[in-house]
Length: 155
Length: 305
Figure (cartoon, one colour):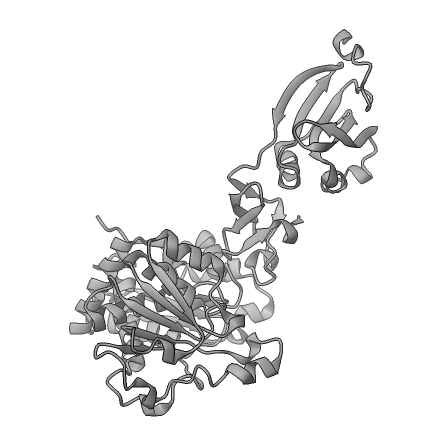
């Protein structure tokens, strides 16, 4: 706790228990908020954007008091902000910290952009192979079409 | 060892080059002796959720020549899909009645999905604009039969190279054989860059052109496809190019002796009927070859060969 309290330069205040999502690309902050449904979340949420970052130049950060994420929720974030870091805080102490990265396969998160894909007509679990993690390219297991960053929609 | 028994064929990439060759060799045996009652007691279901003439009849002919019984429907309006049944439920039900399901469906990915819920193997006979692997196999068979090899050939692909599913599958498969592709299409219907990348990755080559005349004396295979009016946003664009891709007998004067004209059929206005009696015309024989290839495939998947 002392260690955290000593960081007097903190721009976004510390939280006691919950999750910090750091190194979000600044221009993706509101997308991350939307994807995680934080806009309708009743927990205390602090965020900052356009913060100086060595890694990203300009980054955003979100701190959510009292909320911990499941794996599939986390991979949703890495699709829009592949360099994001997930930090779990318990009693002001960092208990877990890892870089998010897109897995090679994703399921049940993104919709196939192809209106003629079977997955947009029947109750089929959407499955993709990730062809490119930087410039998102997701290869639909069913219709074999590629969903890109600009055609990305979440379930 | 080649093991095709109980496998699905959904996409041309589901099988490897050795497996294609194995199927084509067996198809050649069926061409020599087409009627073989080896599938007596077996039931093949042909589920055509959208109409098709030659693909359905070709499969049904192939199954019949093997001695199998054929059940199914030729139009979704004759099936419980018209009552709102899901594809998954239709497939699970039909799998109780048949040993093998051949299906065509307008939605892309439908055959892959069917294979994941079916208790029996699925052969994809076309899922929207996505895949039609048996067309590709019969194209390979026709190329091999007329040229004696699949290696080092010059193949012109003419017409709609953007949306035509037979083109994508053929590019996928023939890229493995050091092919030089001559891509002939209107600007708006050029082969997608992913296919071009695939050609290069596999060590094959491609050249692009907008006129058949530019390539006709260079190629071993002239593969014609339909330029469909519905692919054009502007009808005037279609009118401008529709006759550019019309093959006529007079254009074949300088063709190589071994050159053959292929077309997945049906043709509309891509090949003048005066080409039909030339030595180069091969499209009806190509359709006939489809029966032998489908016999081979059905026999292998049912474990009868």
